Amino acid sequence: MTYLVIVAFVAILGSLAAALVFMMRGGQATDTSTDTPSKNPMARALAFRVGFSILLFIVVLISYWMGWIQPTGLPLKG
Image 1 (cartoon, rainbow, N blue to C red):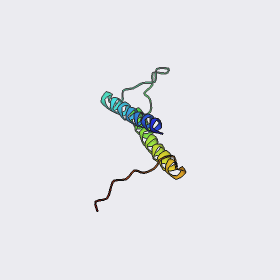
Image 2 (image 1 turned 180 degrees about the horizontal axis):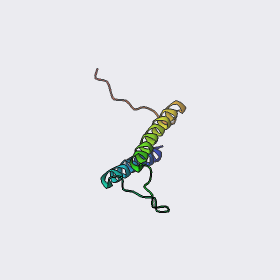
Image 3 (image 1 turned 120 degrees about the horizontal axis):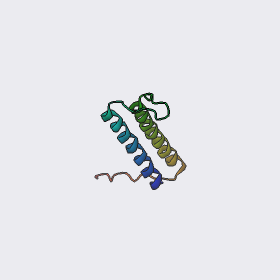
Image 4 (image 1 turned 45 degrees about the horizontal axis):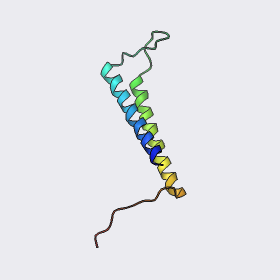
């Protein structure tokens, strides 16, 4: 489960970095097969980031319900 969460975080950070690159280029990315501008690659990268985040949340929630992970919690001061 730890490796799955790490992979999901890397995917989230990767798509965020891709969106940053597209933003810094100013949307000048082109499709190499037709030399036409691609359809807003920054928005697509940010949409993937949101999708990965939602997927990670759902996987963690299902893992909790199935008993694969347990909450550790913080100790209460008595």
